[in-house]
Image 1 (spheres, rainbow, N blue to C red):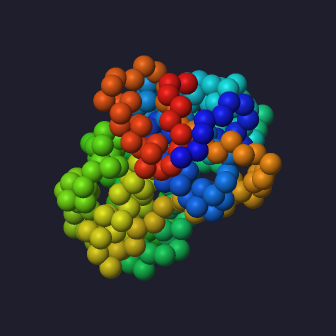
Image 2 (spheres, rainbow, N blue to C red; image 1 turned 90 degrees about the vertical axis):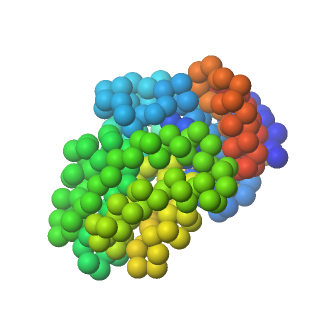
Image 3 (spheres, rainbow, N blue to C red; image 1 turned 45 degrees about the vertical axis):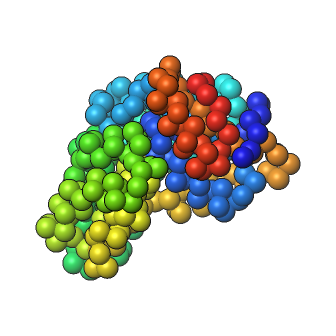
Length: 267
């Protein structure tokens, strides 16, 4: 476990909750000694059922906290909802690079053979014009089958990350069956929370359906924009926003341990 350090962390990750942890893990797998800070805006979870204006406001507040406290070199917005609704506003407001996690529709269109693509996301992402524009630009010849699944997002946030395999399979069954019945051959995980159950989604979907996300592309883009600084030896730390109940704090302590991050408490 890495020790918590104050001051500068090179890579900052922002999500509404535990969804961005697989992106953090991907970067740490690529650069094991990377200096990272992770912020879960638990005070405003879930983002996916809020208005675009609320998402912009809350994401701006959380980003401001990250920058003021940790002076990161780059912010990885490890949340599809924030990326779809607020990424442009964040880039306009703050003078540092941002990498967003937009739905991987372009990649899905390259891979789909039958031109039927499933999009599993939050309600905001499913209904936002930004997503429609992505589909029109990169998948105009595809049928996009959308599913906004706030129930599954909440289940993942509230303990499914560390639940048993049986419980995880049970929770994802309605979503996967929805796409199987629709005849898709590709499923885009367009909410980062779903990446915590990618293996189970692929297992249940079967070999005829490809499950994709933006994890590798996002991490590689962040490393291209800001190469690792090997002089930083402060490891990684995880924070949340707002007051935490004892069960939420215990859950995030478990998440931090699971992903080998020092638990830093409320920011």
